[in-house]
Image (cartoon, rainbow, N blue to C red):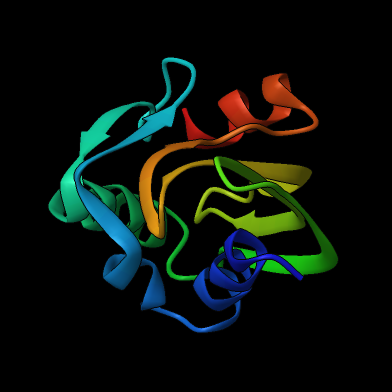
Length: 125
């Protein structure tokens, strides 16, 4: 297992560990035009993004890891199933593909990608 894979496992398997790997210039990209979409900078930006998702779902967002980590020294991808509910009855159930960019052992970028972008957008709008 390469070091990038080890870092990704640590990020996904231990809540909050992502912050110790973030580069000072880290950027998170969340696609679309929904309430959680946008570009988020640094650890504070990531915290803001996660807080938005947590608040909109009353903390029901769950990432079911599939054990799939694809990585080399510069890029990594993690496959997971995303589920959540909203107060108005909307339910999220889609594949997630977290794409991560590395400089050494620091994460410089993260792109959220999903299996059903229309469902994702409708859920978060």
